Image (cartoon, rainbow, N blue to C red):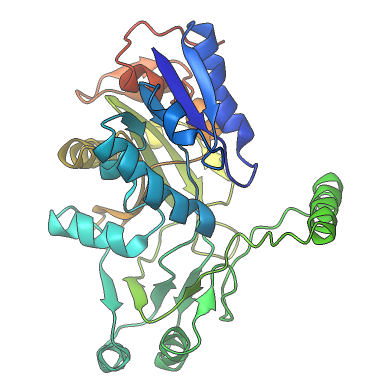
Length: 346
């Protein structure tokens, strides 16, 4: 048995990928690192039983994943993670909404327009505040609360005009997560200087978002969201508090791992969706509406592994509780390789 792991094309997220390697080595399973830039990539990938490409939300990453993963899975018939069921909608809030609503799963209501004038016509009867989102974005970036018709119209004009790049929203109430700690600042500066000298373009977001607009219903009185991560027959849960004087929780880093605070309805819904749609691994973000019913507002096949590991245990699909700390990479490999007795790293 051999597992191939694709290198991250930006040289980031190495620790997450190395955790796969660590577990495979511990279990004496062959592991090889692959790179689409190598001339013999396709010869190498044909030799593996499982191909892992943990792609993230950067533009090049998305383009490459949508190019090679379907070929490996559909044409070469090789087991892949993530497969198309799991990732074709990743970091695309429009695809996520269309998919889950088509199955009538509880997803916070969205209004998506591909026509400028239809969007403005809808504004005449819209109830404010509403939430504007770009289709792409993580950690609450590209998410803005719109308070009135005037600002909503500005959003529409921008998206159906010159458009906007991810992370560059010119509207109020936008958030950017920037770490200004001294060491990281120097590392970032050194990397930028080195790439400038090498004449490399390191812009991770270069595509412009335009010619659509996505508004989502604003759900008040949510001081936290509930993150449920389903991997196979395991559901990990925690809550994330919102930022100070803000309505967004994703990326806040304010996490409460007490399983007693998890609304079990969220766990059951997450299991139901994953089973119905055949997801290998999926994180669900839940909010509660005015009648206190849970609604999914976003989903993501990948996530920060340490947040899952810090959970005190997980529920199985029968809602039985299992104590312990588990790396998501271990759970994924156990399922993908169909090895029940896979040795867990310490």
